[in-house]
Length: 202
Image (cartoon, rainbow, N blue to C red; front, side, top):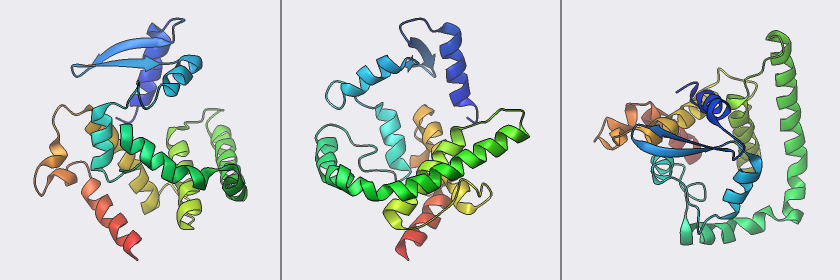
């Protein structure tokens, strides 16, 4: 799981062509890898009517508690988008700039430090996830989780576990997380849910 994204990028580079599309089969399911920005934008423009998320990814996302607009489709997506859009208009998002500047500066400093320590190599996957969580935490909840600069913190570990669980569940041939009592704990999400529920209840 740790290097799944890198493996997909490797397949796209090795087997891709000018179309920007590569077809592959993972555990009996057909997938199309998109490695061309123009193709990706065309696909995104077809949402949510002609292009929808993979149902297994949607189910996996909901199963870890990340329901809402991130997993919504069709009429639910349109309804949620109408609720969220006013908060994200130009006037309101101007107030986001200072927070985004602070978080971006942290990200740049970390990448500069990583590059110096690793002969110019920087692994960005986890950093981008932490950057997103830190921005959302500050803007939506007024909390500075600082997972980007605190890789050993519990919050950082929980973020990492959530994304790994979504990936594992979306690729699993059986919905093991639905097993009564123990299902959620097989990939560690049970403990994460318990901690997050207690934190948000405060």
